[in-house]
Length: 237
Image (spheres, rainbow, N blue to C red):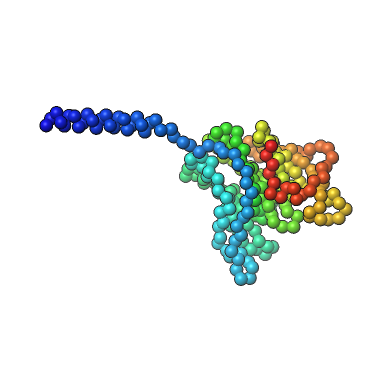
Protein backbone atom coordinates (compact mmCIF):
# COMPACT_ATOMS: atom_id res chain seq x y z
CA UNK A 1 0.00 0.00 0.00
CA UNK A 2 2.86 2.33 0.92
CA UNK A 3 4.57 1.64 -2.43
CA UNK A 4 1.42 2.48 -4.37
CA UNK A 5 1.04 5.78 -2.45
CA UNK A 6 4.68 6.73 -3.13
CA UNK A 7 4.20 5.95 -6.83
CA UNK A 8 1.10 8.18 -7.07
CA UNK A 9 2.91 11.07 -5.34
CA UNK A 10 5.87 10.71 -7.68
CA UNK A 11 3.63 10.70 -10.76
CA UNK A 12 1.78 13.81 -9.52
CA UNK A 13 5.08 15.60 -8.95
CA UNK A 14 6.25 14.78 -12.47
CA UNK A 15 2.92 15.95 -13.93
CA UNK A 16 2.99 19.27 -12.01
CA UNK A 17 6.61 19.87 -13.06
CA UNK A 18 5.70 19.28 -16.72
CA UNK A 19 2.66 21.58 -16.43
CA UNK A 20 4.73 24.38 -14.91
CA UNK A 21 7.33 24.02 -17.66
CA UNK A 22 4.61 24.15 -20.31
CA UNK A 23 3.08 27.26 -18.75
CA UNK A 24 6.42 29.05 -18.48
CA UNK A 25 7.18 28.35 -22.15
CA UNK A 26 4.06 30.24 -23.33
CA UNK A 27 5.14 33.78 -24.35
CA UNK A 28 3.29 36.72 -22.75
CA UNK A 29 1.67 39.05 -25.25
CA UNK A 30 1.46 42.79 -24.53
CA UNK A 31 -0.27 45.51 -26.49
CA UNK A 32 2.28 47.58 -28.34
CA UNK A 33 2.08 50.67 -30.51
CA UNK A 34 0.22 49.95 -33.75
CA UNK A 35 0.15 52.59 -36.47
CA UNK A 36 -3.19 53.48 -38.01
CA UNK A 37 -5.16 56.28 -39.62
CA UNK A 38 -8.92 56.66 -39.75
CA UNK A 39 -11.66 59.21 -40.19
CA UNK A 40 -14.54 59.41 -37.74
CA UNK A 41 -18.15 60.42 -38.16
CA UNK A 42 -19.38 61.65 -34.77
CA UNK A 43 -22.71 60.31 -33.61
CA UNK A 44 -25.15 63.14 -33.02
CA UNK A 45 -26.92 63.78 -29.72
CA UNK A 46 -30.61 63.16 -29.21
CA UNK A 47 -32.77 66.23 -29.73
CA UNK A 48 -35.95 67.39 -28.06
CA UNK A 49 -39.05 68.27 -30.07
CA UNK A 50 -37.98 71.92 -30.21
CA UNK A 51 -34.61 71.00 -31.76
CA UNK A 52 -32.52 71.59 -28.64
CA UNK A 53 -30.12 68.99 -27.27
CA UNK A 54 -31.54 66.80 -24.52
CA UNK A 55 -29.28 67.52 -21.52
CA UNK A 56 -27.24 64.94 -19.64
CA UNK A 57 -25.85 63.02 -22.60
CA UNK A 58 -22.30 61.62 -22.78
CA UNK A 59 -21.29 60.37 -26.23
CA UNK A 60 -18.17 58.20 -26.55
CA UNK A 61 -16.95 59.05 -30.06
CA UNK A 62 -13.69 57.08 -30.09
CA UNK A 63 -11.52 54.87 -27.91
CA UNK A 64 -7.87 53.77 -28.13
CA UNK A 65 -5.94 51.21 -26.08
CA UNK A 66 -2.31 52.29 -25.69
CA UNK A 67 -1.07 49.43 -23.51
CA UNK A 68 -2.30 46.94 -20.92
CA UNK A 69 -3.19 49.69 -18.43
CA UNK A 70 -3.75 52.80 -20.54
CA UNK A 71 -6.80 53.76 -22.59
CA UNK A 72 -7.89 57.02 -24.21
CA UNK A 73 -11.53 57.94 -24.75
CA UNK A 74 -13.02 60.91 -26.58
CA UNK A 75 -16.31 61.84 -24.96
CA UNK A 76 -18.72 64.64 -25.87
CA UNK A 77 -21.01 66.34 -23.36
CA UNK A 78 -23.30 68.25 -25.73
CA UNK A 79 -25.67 70.99 -24.69
CA UNK A 80 -27.69 73.82 -26.18
CA UNK A 81 -26.85 77.28 -24.89
CA UNK A 82 -27.85 80.84 -25.60
CA UNK A 83 -25.37 81.17 -28.46
CA UNK A 84 -26.01 77.74 -30.00
CA UNK A 85 -24.90 74.16 -29.51
CA UNK A 86 -21.60 73.16 -27.94
CA UNK A 87 -20.17 69.63 -27.76
CA UNK A 88 -17.57 69.98 -25.01
CA UNK A 89 -15.27 67.26 -26.36
CA UNK A 90 -13.11 65.82 -23.60
CA UNK A 91 -10.04 63.59 -23.82
CA UNK A 92 -10.10 61.09 -20.94
CA UNK A 93 -6.90 59.18 -20.24
CA UNK A 94 -7.18 56.20 -17.89
CA UNK A 95 -3.86 54.77 -16.71
CA UNK A 96 -4.36 52.14 -14.03
CA UNK A 97 -6.38 53.77 -11.25
CA UNK A 98 -5.42 57.31 -12.34
CA UNK A 99 -7.68 59.29 -14.66
CA UNK A 100 -6.92 62.62 -16.34
CA UNK A 101 -9.43 64.72 -18.27
CA UNK A 102 -8.58 67.33 -20.91
CA UNK A 103 -11.54 69.43 -22.03
CA UNK A 104 -11.00 70.99 -25.46
CA UNK A 105 -12.88 74.07 -24.24
CA UNK A 106 -10.08 74.67 -21.74
CA UNK A 107 -7.20 73.71 -24.01
CA UNK A 108 -8.10 76.28 -26.69
CA UNK A 109 -10.41 79.24 -27.17
CA UNK A 110 -13.84 78.17 -28.43
CA UNK A 111 -12.72 74.55 -28.18
CA UNK A 112 -16.16 73.61 -26.93
CA UNK A 113 -17.39 73.73 -30.53
CA UNK A 114 -14.99 71.02 -31.70
CA UNK A 115 -15.83 67.40 -32.56
CA UNK A 116 -13.27 64.69 -33.33
CA UNK A 117 -13.18 63.76 -37.03
CA UNK A 118 -9.83 62.11 -37.67
CA UNK A 119 -6.98 60.33 -35.85
CA UNK A 120 -3.57 58.97 -36.85
CA UNK A 121 -1.08 57.01 -34.75
CA UNK A 122 2.66 57.20 -35.43
CA UNK A 123 4.97 54.86 -33.49
CA UNK A 124 8.49 55.69 -32.39
CA UNK A 125 9.02 52.48 -30.38
CA UNK A 126 7.05 49.37 -29.42
CA UNK A 127 5.56 51.16 -26.39
CA UNK A 128 5.94 54.78 -27.49
CA UNK A 129 4.14 56.91 -30.03
CA UNK A 130 1.93 59.88 -30.82
CA UNK A 131 -1.77 60.15 -31.63
CA UNK A 132 -2.50 63.10 -33.93
CA UNK A 133 -6.09 64.33 -33.73
CA UNK A 134 -8.21 66.56 -35.94
CA UNK A 135 -11.37 68.23 -34.66
CA UNK A 136 -13.91 70.10 -36.77
CA UNK A 137 -16.54 72.72 -36.01
CA UNK A 138 -19.05 71.61 -38.67
CA UNK A 139 -19.91 75.25 -39.29
CA UNK A 140 -19.59 77.65 -42.21
CA UNK A 141 -15.89 78.24 -42.73
CA UNK A 142 -15.03 74.79 -41.35
CA UNK A 143 -12.45 75.68 -38.70
CA UNK A 144 -10.24 72.91 -37.33
CA UNK A 145 -8.44 72.26 -34.11
CA UNK A 146 -5.53 69.83 -33.86
CA UNK A 147 -4.10 68.05 -30.84
CA UNK A 148 -1.30 65.58 -30.13
CA UNK A 149 -1.24 62.87 -27.47
CA UNK A 150 2.32 61.66 -26.88
CA UNK A 151 2.79 58.56 -24.78
CA UNK A 152 5.39 56.13 -23.53
CA UNK A 153 5.49 53.48 -20.83
CA UNK A 154 6.10 56.27 -18.27
CA UNK A 155 4.10 59.32 -19.35
CA UNK A 156 1.14 60.58 -21.38
CA UNK A 157 0.71 64.24 -22.31
CA UNK A 158 -1.76 66.24 -24.40
CA UNK A 159 -0.88 69.35 -26.41
CA UNK A 160 -2.81 71.48 -28.91
CA UNK A 161 -1.85 73.41 -32.03
CA UNK A 162 -3.23 76.81 -33.09
CA UNK A 163 -6.59 77.06 -34.85
CA UNK A 164 -6.67 76.42 -38.59
CA UNK A 165 -9.20 77.41 -41.23
CA UNK A 166 -10.07 74.70 -43.77
CA UNK A 167 -6.62 73.30 -43.13
CA UNK A 168 -4.57 70.24 -42.25
CA UNK A 169 -1.42 69.08 -40.52
CA UNK A 170 1.46 67.19 -42.11
CA UNK A 171 3.42 64.73 -39.96
CA UNK A 172 6.71 63.07 -40.89
CA UNK A 173 7.38 59.60 -39.45
CA UNK A 174 11.09 60.35 -39.26
CA UNK A 175 10.45 63.34 -36.97
CA UNK A 176 6.96 63.13 -35.40
CA UNK A 177 7.67 66.04 -33.03
CA UNK A 178 7.85 68.37 -36.05
CA UNK A 179 4.43 69.21 -37.52
CA UNK A 180 3.40 71.41 -40.45
CA UNK A 181 0.18 73.36 -39.84
CA UNK A 182 -1.64 74.56 -42.97
CA UNK A 183 -4.37 77.20 -42.70
CA UNK A 184 -6.34 79.23 -45.23
CA UNK A 185 -5.65 82.96 -45.02
CA UNK A 186 -7.89 84.27 -47.81
CA UNK A 187 -9.64 83.45 -51.05
CA UNK A 188 -7.49 83.04 -54.11
CA UNK A 189 -10.48 84.27 -56.14
CA UNK A 190 -11.76 87.79 -55.73
CA UNK A 191 -14.99 86.79 -54.05
CA UNK A 192 -15.77 84.91 -50.88
CA UNK A 193 -16.52 81.23 -51.37
CA UNK A 194 -16.04 78.38 -48.87
CA UNK A 195 -15.23 75.89 -51.63
CA UNK A 196 -13.07 78.17 -53.77
CA UNK A 197 -9.25 77.85 -53.89
CA UNK A 198 -7.55 79.53 -50.95
CA UNK A 199 -4.23 81.08 -50.12
CA UNK A 200 -2.55 78.86 -47.52
CA UNK A 201 0.11 79.77 -45.01
CA UNK A 202 2.27 77.15 -43.32
CA UNK A 203 3.56 77.14 -39.78
CA UNK A 204 6.36 74.85 -38.65
CA UNK A 205 5.49 73.56 -35.19
CA UNK A 206 7.68 71.76 -32.67
CA UNK A 207 6.20 69.67 -29.87
CA UNK A 208 8.40 70.31 -26.85
CA UNK A 209 8.19 68.96 -23.32
CA UNK A 210 5.69 71.57 -22.11
CA UNK A 211 3.93 72.98 -25.18
CA UNK A 212 3.92 73.30 -28.94
CA UNK A 213 5.68 76.26 -30.51
CA UNK A 214 4.84 77.34 -34.07
CA UNK A 215 6.67 79.71 -36.40
CA UNK A 216 5.41 81.01 -39.77
CA UNK A 217 7.30 79.53 -42.69
CA UNK A 218 8.86 82.23 -44.88
CA UNK A 219 8.06 82.42 -48.57
CA UNK A 220 5.00 82.96 -50.74
CA UNK A 221 1.62 81.53 -49.78
CA UNK A 222 0.43 78.42 -51.59
CA UNK A 223 -2.86 78.14 -53.48
CA UNK A 224 -4.78 74.99 -52.55
CA UNK A 225 -8.30 73.63 -52.96
CA UNK A 226 -9.75 73.21 -49.43
CA UNK A 227 -11.87 70.27 -50.58
CA UNK A 228 -8.67 68.25 -50.97
CA UNK A 229 -8.34 68.29 -47.16
CA UNK A 230 -11.79 66.86 -46.48
CA UNK A 231 -11.26 63.44 -44.95
CA UNK A 232 -7.52 64.10 -45.08
CA UNK A 233 -6.94 66.71 -42.38
CA UNK A 234 -3.95 64.67 -41.20
CA UNK A 235 -1.28 63.63 -43.69
CA UNK A 236 1.42 61.22 -42.54
CA UNK A 237 4.48 60.95 -44.75
